[in-house]
Image 1 (cartoon, rainbow, N blue to C red):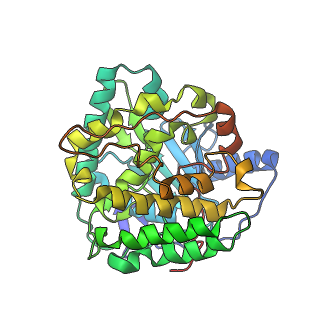
Image 2: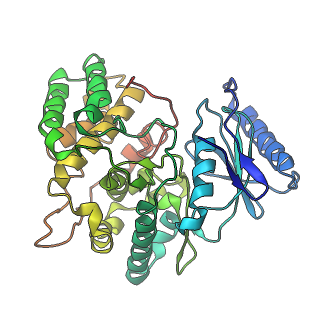
Amino acid sequence: MSPDSFGSRVVKNPAPAAVSTVMSGTDRNGMAMARARHALAKAGLDPSIELHPLSSVTNEVWAAGRHIVRVNRHPVARLWREATLSTMLLSAGVGCPPIVAYGGIVGADWMITERLPGQVLSRCWPAMSREDRRSAIRQLAERLQQLHGYVLREPLPEVAIPQLLASSAGPGSVDRLMSGLDAAQDLDHVDPVLVLRAKTLVRESLAALDPVPAETLIHGDIHFENVLWDGERITGLLDFEWARTAASDLELDVFLRFCAFPFLHVAEDYEQVTLPGDYAEVPGWLAQDHPELFAHPRLRDRLRVYSIAYDLRELLMDPPDRPVELLSHLHPYHRLADTVDGRGHIDLLDLDPVTEVPTVDPIAVDPIAVDDIVGSAVAAIVDTTDLVSA
């Protein structure tokens, strides 16, 4: 891909990857702050400004006055890729933060953006009125429609994605998924019959997948931690690391599991007030405002394949270390089993377009079970390279 410029700066092709090291918590905090200050200095900004750490699964993220500093510590090019894409999207009106500077080498690269007003929507949601919540979803749908209507000038580099799916369409799109199921079948404590049933479900759903590759640009990680809200309006969408061309309804995979398990996506200080019941109406509101996402006649079959591909990837990253009966019911093994058994979060969704718009039945959750898996089985995105070859 050719470089894209922002202002007088250029997003250049990344240099070779740096070697990362694992440090203790104390060292990591001090070194992380030093890396952020180094990035500020390289960008010509004040490196002595007060820094405030922000919650993130994939990067070291700091608020630095009017800017946000993100530092990548993994040998992948997603941050460079996001800087390039965000530069393209500035004119599209989707609300991505303007890029101030990008630099470093892959595995130690950094990006600085302008700090947009507002807080993440998930933090605001518990105290919002129903009217404000409805308005927020209407505005989110508008942003997604703008994003989905954007035509890339040139293809983006491939990236490891939350679902074990290839970017190609048709039967080839599930090759990685089927290989991953083969690998899961050999894991300790994993029921091979469950895996065989998952394979059968995927094969039976192949006809529901697209025959040709989709050209729709999706965000890929839409949940309320990646949406900014200022009390009246959405001011921006964050974290385009997973953006790619795909079927538009793939956007629903992360979004719907967020509505079912919102506490898995948020910072620890407000997990206990982030309740599934507060999100029961959200899928229906989105269906009203962005009906194209829900239009496929075999949507449920497609969503099941997406869900299996997502939970399988997490299962391979966090395989059972004990009999599955002793695992939290939110462990990816049990989420996968629920989908295969027809009682997962997709099956709780009413997708009948004739009778009523989609709603999600609130899922009863044991708060202790949440504490057991937050951090190790976060249902958002975990930074990793491909686990299974294409």
